[in-house]
Length: 274
Length: 258
Image (cartoon, rainbow over all chains, first blue to last red; front, side, top):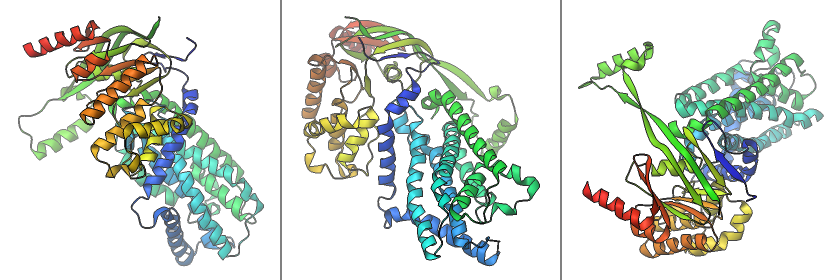
């Protein structure tokens, strides 16, 4: 028989995992589509919520930090500056929290059908990508409103988005698998993300960070991503702090690597403990 | 004909945690014990862990085109066996070799979403079960015709009656074209007429198309009609393998004697 053969043995995968994952790309597409279709069912505003959430955050930040605290804005409209940071941050934050819950939320499917479990976090992260595209429209409108012409470097933006994607996915793999055993992470993650919103250079520019702390500051991969976004869109005055950038990108790949290794190690036990 | 499924010394161990309970517990005791549990390193005093083998030393072979039933009382390990064969649960010991594409139906309507329409759910459920989009497109009309819900194809599934729901779900599953089909207690759905129709369908995909079917059900007449051979499980081990009618008789005698 020239057909594919599956061997199941304890401690071993039956077949090639990565090819299996690739073969399930249609499933990834449909799971993502499902979540997008059902998310805004029975809401009045529907998909507009994807745009509203960042818009409201930008307004709050602009008023609190721009008008009341008068943080420096390097000559760029403060709302645009904040928007450049809110977009990647909200992408990261949504992606990570959805990915963390993706296994638990799909426990029904998980315990009845086999396919590479990595599909779930990947699908959850991809949904946030769709949100990102929608809310990117807000940035375009803001720039139009302030008659602000973005630098040509905006073409490099997808690269920084990719770094954010990798970070969210890596951390998502890690926390999703922990979440299977310890549901505590359902409470820890929103808290950490809240903290991250203030630690990351969203309301302020990373140039205010003292020189000697700078490298440490970029241990947070999102600091590099947000800086990258600002640099790519605003151009001009904003400069890229290269050592910090490299640090952030390096960390994000490390997170992905660790996330995948951990996920693969505990993946087989998910059904027994979920 | 060579074996399409070979199972050797298969075993699955679960660990059960028993909490030693007080005769009566107050909230204060619960809090104090909880705090002790957090700080004390030896938790062995508080709870005991017992090993439990859901399956042990299970070995058998199935040839292509066979329809094999699995008989046994609740807790005999039938579902665990099917879950391991479906690759959902990982075995503790042993080895399984399967030739060809396998599809399993451990539950009717896995992944169906109530908010989505029948049409959307056919695609979603199909890909979850392992079909490709092209296969579903090709089979779409057949699936709809078999389920008899064509009028409600664009209605959200949450508005379906439970009968309509299971008919649609079963139709999707039965139109996959795997070499090995694993089915767990899904025939107990729909009305008598649909049950008959689905049993006949399963029989035909095995007889006419040479597919192998592994089947668990408590519906003995359906089992006797469908399955050529059966495996009788008892407390996680194989008691006997043989002719379905004989095993059903044996099983019923044992059950009635208890």
